[in-house]
Length: 294
Image 1 (cartoon, rainbow, N blue to C red):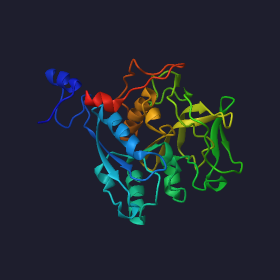
Image 2: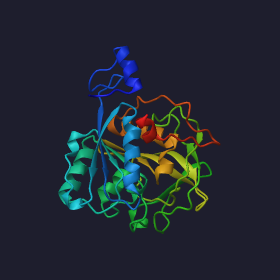
Image 3: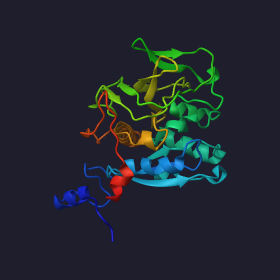
Image 4: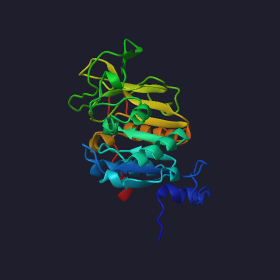
C-alpha cells in the first residue's frame, strides 16, 4: 500500500494533489543522483541528498551507483537534472559525449562539493562546473575567482587549484540577492561545520557567484554557490557538503533544493524560507532521514 506524508494527506483533503504532479502546479521533476566513487563518504551522504530533494515533493530521485565507471551508460535524456556526488574514474567516451549533448540541449547539472574535484582533464566538464580543485588543476585550467574588497576578482596567477582548512561553521554571504536560488534568504547565514573550499580555478565562463564564504587559508571571500550556463543547459555548483554534518545544515538543504530546481527548469518555485533557516550567528540543522522515519 502506498503511504502519504502528513503534508500530502493535507493536500489530498484540499484536492490539490494529482498523481505525478507537484502541488505548486508543475510536474514532478526526475533527478538522477550519481555516486559510487568519491574520496568522501558517498554511502553516507547520498541518502541525505536524495531525501533533501524528495522531501519537497518536487523531485523523483533515482540513484546511479557507478562503482565501475566503464559500465556507466545512463540515458541522461530521461531526466530533468543530474546531481553529481561523484569524484572518481573518467566515464567512457560515449557517456561523456552523451552527457555533453544532454547539457547542451537544455539538461541540468548539480555539482556537490568534491564532485568539483572530478574530471580535471575533461574540458567540457570544467566548463560546465565553472571552477574546480585538485586533480592537477593549475593556471592552464583558468583563473582563480574570488571576492576581495567587495569586488569580484579573476586572478590568472600561477598555482594549483584547490585547498581547504579544518572544518568550521562559517558564514555564507549572498552576493546576488535577486537570483531565484537565494532570493529571500538572509544576506548572511551560518553554514554547518564544513570544509571551506578555496583557490578553486577553472574556465569561469557564463558563471555567476551567488554566495561566498571567508577563507582562513586565503583571507579572501571564496565562491560557495555558483551558476553556470553551458549551451542551453544550466549548472548549479555548491562547494559545500563534505559530510553528514554539513549536509544537515538547513541552509545547505534549502539552497540544494532551490538550485536543483533551477538547474532543471531555469526557475524556482520552492520559495518558502523555513522558520528554521540559520541566522548570521547560529547554525540550524535538520536530520532529514530521521524525520522521514517518523
